[in-house]
Length: 339
Image 1 (cartoon, one colour):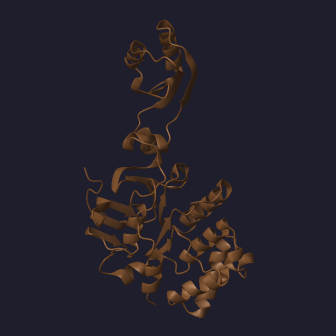
Image 2: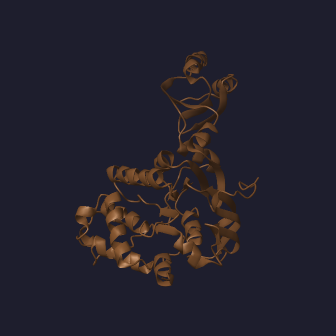
Image 3: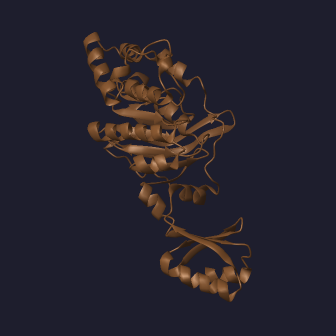
């Protein structure tokens, strides 16, 4: 069943049967999707899943092979200039000029969008304040830390006050403390301006923390879409894990027949179960293990997380792979940007 059931008047981004191929390789496979105005929408998936290809199409860097994509009511293929005027983008790859200061990078971006000198200065002051970099505005970018560069790239994407902001893996390679600081700025943008933000990530905790709705994308297809809580609830219960060196078949069958056990599997000496009423089920399972002379060395019970959802849907843990999307997208975007 397609995720897009019909047009929505409040949708700011609409995809219809969108496919993108690079030769024989299918990067995006018949995607249909709507993103509402004001959403902080996440595209969650491993590197190589198609997230960056989708952002490249929505930002007019790439054209789809088939299907359509509209942004702010404009066709991404036929109305490139109109789309570019309404979007901001923070690329996955570094794209600041190291030989310029933070202020000069922002000023250059404002000139590309045709902002006059008074407006550029006002916007520079505004966005530097938003990301706490006003005191480093005169420093050369080569003296910025990785986190500072990311914050400045977010500030740059806000210079022309876009309706839609694309953040492509905005915390990739950053330390945990800096990542959480970036999360704070992203949340502040959403709450303060009601901006539509499209976040691509392969960090489960990032998607869970920030996004109001998530599409899990793998091998170019959307395999699930819901709120973070809805996705986790789709597993149907808590996760119970038993460590044992002798999971006898008769023991597993007896556990499988327990009323509150929904799913059971074994992997690397562990019995993994999806269960209801886990706290009351544990004593019964331990009693069953004792009756079959099965030794249980440890028991853990927890709520499901997004990685559990991903594994269930794709059959593997989220992975780091070589990016398949073209590396020239930043140069192309900047070269074709028209005032």
